Image (cartoon, rainbow, N blue to C red; front, side):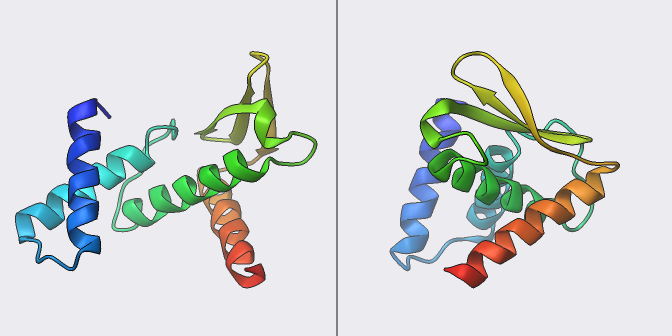
Length: 124
């Protein structure tokens, strides 16, 4: 996402939080900008009616791992996370990369992410 899109998304988020009515065009733009932001670290195609849901689940997973770390990696060690067809990979500040988990299919990967997020909601 470029800076202009990031600013517009922040503006629409503020408008929605302030209970200001959004037009249908603004809602569509908001959805597309959120999807674009959520998909930045996903390196496979998302399609179908649940693409927005899956992208948001990956975004939630990414935010949690960057905030809390994962396994033997502390949050301060992790630079970024990305999703490919068959793995979730952590990129470390030391320029190393390590797979959090590997999968046979992208559906299996998405199922893991959704289940992980559901567990976090139950614990919280």
